[in-house]
Length: 373
Ligand SMILES: [Zn+2]
Image (cartoon, rainbow, N blue to C red):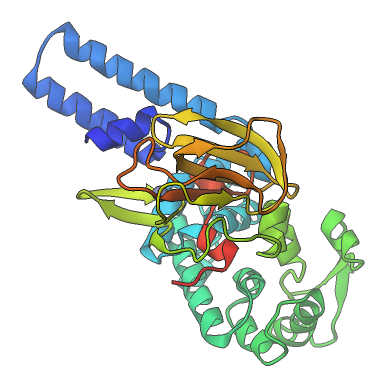
């Protein structure tokens, strides 16, 4: 309980944790104390929760352009993704949802058909997200078995999972050429369009691809690029260009849900276990946007990189840089320590797709840096 309160105060807690904590705090106080005191405590906690929320929610929309009607379901995406151990895919799932409905229909992920039901049979967002994430996770599993890339999975959300086998036999990486061929030669004929008839489909994405058309009954072969519009440049670009902050990494805790002291938590980054004083390197060039003490992170440094990614280095015994400093990849930005909410010397590293501190903007640093479990 205390750790959760700490995480709420320091802004590390998820929204779900904050709500649960507020309810729990109210409940236990209600039965153990009386009068104005409990009202005062409850109001205080509510204020803290709303303050941390409002400061953290700033600028979410502009960062990845995910509309508020999709963002408000973030905790559902995280919870469902957690069931399949794919929390790091939440940004892609929310980008897919934005393309599917923009949050404007109850079947928010348009997942009825993947459950074998007529379109829009699913009539509420939580069920749609549960089915959509389940379907995506099974496609991801097929893709991993077939050795195809992550964009194949995204395109398969539109075409159906047979696209994975198709790409697997043709180089294993999704391309616009493969997607168009599959649309024309497989999807469209299966629904009666055997002549490859097209219709005009004009928007920024189709024009950038130099193909302002679609095949009748052929799905949307521009789907990956539609989804990419809602992912930051870094997410689109892949893992190139980053180095390890500490080497060898010696990971002591991974990204995602974990149990700590009997309490389930969302771990926002990965932990590198290294002795106090070990120099920490910047993972890429960038500008220092924070270098200060924080209750939970201790001495931490945050760097914004050219592609919009941000990296955060926490629990340092000392920081070597100040806000506004330009750093080069490999520069020593601080030294490993045990400051803030930490039990033993380690570096806690977070990587996000933007300045947002929301869970939706976080990436699995192990995946970004190419560290295998
Ligand atoms: Zn950590």
